[in-house]
Length: 330
Image (cartoon, rainbow, N blue to C red; front, side):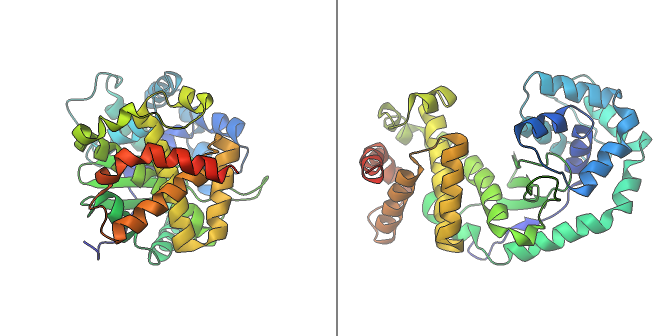
């Protein structure tokens, strides 16, 4: 298991869904959230598909976005369909009628493959950069104290299309797939190459991998976790409003803490501090330094044999976090 590595690949189903997003209102909404210049390929895709804005595949996708369907759900659906025919049965009830057939028709009638062929060099460059970045790290070894030997294959797709400002993570059979855009630059500058901000690649992908792993971990260990959920976490009312349940609160804090810890121990303390600062300013996670402190304590005790797995430590997590919150706020 220690020799497992992240697989970097380009998936045409993800590219198709991303292309469809390019002619919905998603890009404009993303710009309202954070102004940036998408990758050249993303902008070229919008131009390529401009005349297909009223195609049924686009209209149906827009309707789903209007209903607040999460991107994870959209990408999960298309990744369950075989490529290239996209034929599939047993679609969830929220899926629009014949959506898969309409997506296939859009792909064919717009000759989208021609654009991908014309700009294959840009995708190849992104893939080569991503392979280079992940040669330097061992996510599996880092995650073992928290989850044991991770059986799922971690898959990374450098995404130079849409969404251009956020990563998308999906669990698909025995794979955890994460599509990550390059780091956006200030103003109207093009995004950074993947190799020029490795911390962005690590943190963006690790957030999704750890989130997916923890969601499964809490389900699989529900019997052990349930008593712990009765112990309130020391978070603000604003945080509770965003994440109403104990599981949501813990998962968000745990994910952010693990990412910060990875950056500190595998990249640099400076990158970890930068990540923590962004989480505090952008998301109001003021308790994050305390979370990192608690996770460091767990790792130390784990390495000394005090705990065999994370569930042994979970009953102590809320109490330790309260203490750490007090100390780090002094």
